[in-house]
Image 1 (spheres, rainbow, N blue to C red):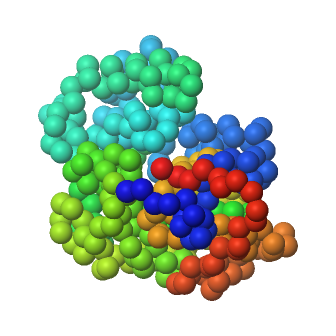
Image 2: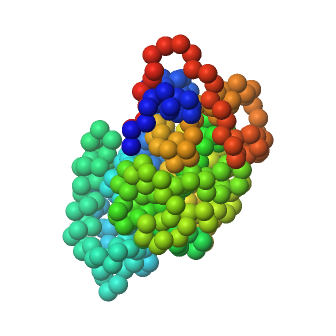
Amino acid sequence: MLVRPRRLLARGVIGMNRRNVHYVGRYNDRRLYPLVDDKLRTKLLAREHGVTTPELIGVVRSQFEVKQVADRVAGRSGFAVKPAKGSGGKGLLVIDRQEDGRYLKPSGAEVTRKDLQRHLSNILSGLYSLGGAPDAAVIEELIRFDHGFADFTYEGVPDIRVIVFRGYPVMAMMRLPTAASDGKANLHQGAVGVGLDLTDGRALRGVQFGRPRTDHPDTGRGLDDLKVPYWETLLNLAAGCYEFTGLGFLGTDLVLDRHHGPMLLELNARPGLAIQVANGQGLRGPLDLVEGLPEGRPVHERVAFSRERLGHAPVPAPERRAGAPEAVPG
């Protein structure tokens, strides 16, 4: 759906140009990118700082190790394989369970041992990695999503994206896997994006393929019923990523595991802007407000500020200064 640029700007919607120049370029030191572009480094760094992440089963770095994977995952009820330097869910393989030496995906489709080895080899060759460079395969314990989300997903694990600016959560959404997205929490593949109220984690509105959505397309469950539990803990987890990465503009992806509670899944130094569509408001107002705040406040104070000042009603965007309109997100 096409929307006039003037209307988007009036809502405080920022485009890729402003994101790249004013926020990513100004607040994210490039030397820190590897901390989040490499999921294995992120996981190890998070562990050093006491942040919970999915259990690491193993790392495959060479073709020789590919044939040993069956032994590494033996006895596991399920596991996930992903490239250390992948993005957008590319290369993610989820094995829900093992039966009689067979690997079964959440859909029930079988993955043979040769299929698994071929997938690992493709990861090592860089097929799914940023820039196509040789990579490593990370094998993790399978996340079992919180029972409360059973009616809000199709096969996959819903995740929560929080944009954190200078350590303050400024906007949040939940991504709900669907049949169209093949059980993945990826908006451009057809997952439903649900804007979340920063105050209490309640759903504000939903979108799929850029259009409003009031229910989950596969379960029919109304999105108005969605409220994320452990909300304050999740926001504290997201805000704390500022301290251990040093990145000022950050996309944090979190999940709720039924056994381990809130967990950090991964981080993004160049987060997408579709979160604005899911929330029906732009980032400009919240970002401008936070940009004027002093440094040095502890995590819990930053989270309390965001819940009080950025929840419920959108923060108005400032009057646009003279100049050419910036690009808007597609």
